[in-house]
Amino acid sequence: MKINNNISAKLSLYKLNKANDKYGSSLEKLSSGKKLVRSSDDPSAYSTARKIRDQIKGLRMAKRNALDAVSLMNTAEGALEEVHSMLQKMKELSMKATNETMVKIDKMNVQNEFNELAKEISRISSASEFNKKPLLDGSFENVFHIGANKGESIYCKIEKIDAEKLLLQGSNSAKIEVSGAAADNGTGTLANTADTYEVVSKSDYTGATINFANSITNEAATNYILTDTNGDAVATSSNGLVYSEIIAAPAVNADTITFVNSVVDGEVMLSGSVGVGEAKGKSDITGHLLGKGEYEISTDNIPAGFNVGLKDTDGKIIALGATDLIGTAAANASLVTEWVDVKDTSISMLSQNAETNMSGKILVEDEGIDITAYENAEKAVSAVDNAIAIVSSQRSRLGAYQTRLENSVKTLEQGELTFTEVVSKIEDLDMAEEMVELTKQQILVQAGTAMLSQANARPESLLRILN
Image 1: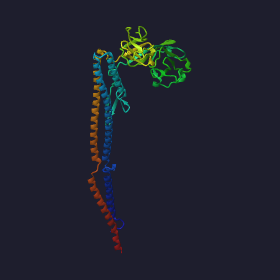
Image 2 (image 1 turned 90 degrees about the horizontal axis):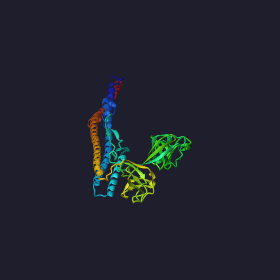
Image 3 (image 1 turned 45 degrees about the vertical axis):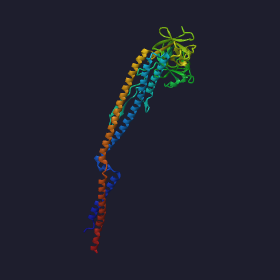
Image 4 (image 1 turned 135 degrees about the vertical axis):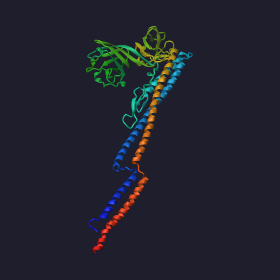
């Protein structure tokens, strides 16, 4: 019997510590429900499980992306559904306009409804958005990432859908032209420059900040701004009649452009020469039923009761200047708000704001679709059919995108389920099996504690020998 080293006690302590470690590990696993609590439990399996969990998170985010894309497609589809309905109505109106039992005023009312539907189609095109992202203006071209890894994406492009693209623009685009001259009044160069500019209102100006100290027209008096091709201010005006160039101080040496009548929007074309240049302004107008071509504002051969009219290229007066649709004659061209049909003054051939009136010429650059004539109405039916085919094609493409995205969502859900099953087999704990292990280690701890106590008591028997 030895007293210096109690081998039995040391062996019992070793076994007890080992059982305690396993007992504590079982408690951790049971409390977490996982058999891999830390990487040391199984390094390779832990690494595999972490990679699969990252894959699952990627799949979940990809599914969210795909569902967002489906919502976007639904928004675009809803807008195109409304466009489709309006096209059906426009076809009905075109067919209705072929009914020769209607008088001209009836056909004009049909034309007006047709024009408004065309405008609404264009409005829907510009206003349809998803999360501030335009959908139908032709700018939408995106890639949707719908996978957990790089390159797993779907390309999507939505074509522009508006009245102009569908070739259904109503008869509502015209310009009035007015002549003018650019004068060399000092050190400026505007009068000697041949170029094209654009007139915008001050509220619509988005170019570089204007130094009004270098402009004859001060900031408070400025209402209209002449801009260059970059959209920056070149000259300013208070009334649209006289534009003063913005130059380095002193501004009193600025060149000027002077028009016969005000130009408050549209284009200004200069033909420069030394000291003076010719200027032509074109001011936009909406709401007309004139055919494509050029019309002259004239005071010659005007029917009794009116003072000014529109003359076509054949020299024939086709419209009269009025201030309303009940035949009130305008005293001169600057007061005209309605150019009414020479045969029926209750029908407006062109509407405009008195503010933009000019003497000179009216240029109709795009006559749009006029369904007031039988032949044109027949053509309009075909044009609407073509537009319906374009919209149907776009909706079909959106449907294909949506179907693909929905299938991607299902695939992602299946992938997420499969990977979850794999990681469950690696990480998840069999609770019943671990309870058996816990009970075993609990008994071993209790037995080890008792045996350690017995082993520590053995050296006491030596005292009896010594006694």
